[in-house]
Length: 416
Image (cartoon, rainbow, N blue to C red; front, side):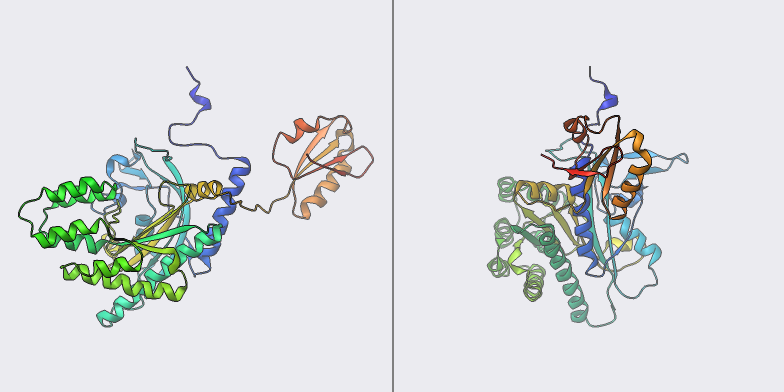
């Protein structure tokens, strides 16, 4: 029987040493890139009231939440998702702000699921949220143009963030929630059938989705054909042209929106990293417009997820549009490692060995090295000339080794 005191629960792990240095450097790189677009940092609590992530909001199912009680008997949850928390903050602290609010964050999220499929139950995310518009008093075209520019900014930020991480071969796949929902409405699908179809498509079970559609009765042939065609609407700009031929006017408007969005992405110069997937569906029901996922080699899931959620903030008391994304940091690290892309860590770790009897003189040299910005580990020994070099180096990750004999200045010794 193993000693649980030395092990972590299923789905979580320890991170230390050089791996943690790389992770921290990647966090810094991503946040610096997001800051260049004018986003400001915010921290939200690790746990919130249950209602922040309730079914009404459309976030993570209750069975996948880590729930517990406080001393007042209120139900609390470890956050599974940052977006509802940030939405709550914007309504609470920026309710009088008339211009868009740009916020970014980093932290861990928690998923209490039994089907891990290689995923951890605790993972780190870094994201950005753009909430609100300059004005809602103009015409519908002016309002839609504001949303378009925000969506384009968010997608361009995703591309530039992944490039800043060192990735080159990736694709940002874009879908549109209204396209699918309007075709379901045109086909007069009931909520139960729509939800089953939604789940099949989300799980990429295209055969199951096709079987379900073909089993339906009392559905107009043209509507059924449009829904069947959704499963194949994946690819480049030509996909939009094909999708524009569906019968639903609302679905046509969604395709038109994506076409105008593509024009803006071309202006950003990021269109080569963009493709379209009109069968894309998110597990979060609060999305109302575009949804996006970024994929790359070496990872079986999206490394970036996001979209537009124009109704979420109304749950907290302010009806304003919003769009955002999160970077799944652990998956980005996996992708970089799989593709042989290093993360340069600008940290010089020095092991400084000195004799105990030469303590005061050693302290002066240690202080000077640290003032120069080095990270210095001091190792006092009885005889600096006879210490076990290999054993000392094995205690940590060091770039340089200094040995100081009694009455002498420290001398650098080659490592390796």
